Length: 107
Image (tube, rainbow, N blue to C red; front, top):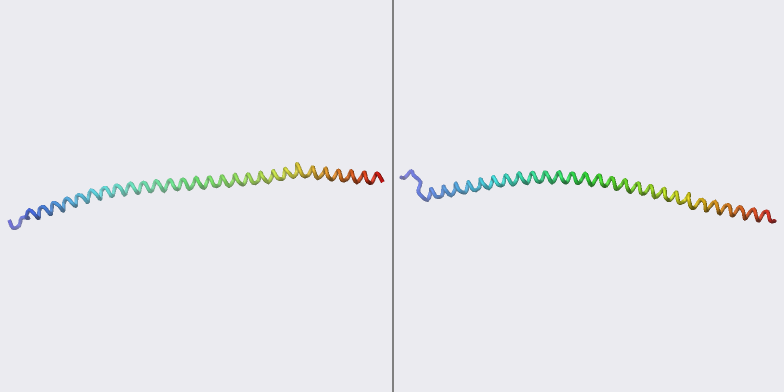
């Protein structure tokens, strides 16, 4: 009987085996959670990369739209000059010439 473990020793060994098994389950759960987290982070990185690409494309489109509007605004200003200011200037020149001719012809 001296070689056989006592009841207290058996209880300690059973407790040790139980704790080891509990840790193994926790490690398996931890590993599964870790794999899930890694997969989720990979998905999030992919989503962020896609959003970054979309934002870059939208910024390029917005810049092009602003450039187009600026060009159109510039051409509108030129059109206003050609359509409004130049005819008025020509009219003023013709009136001045008529007054000058009338004043010269009347003397």
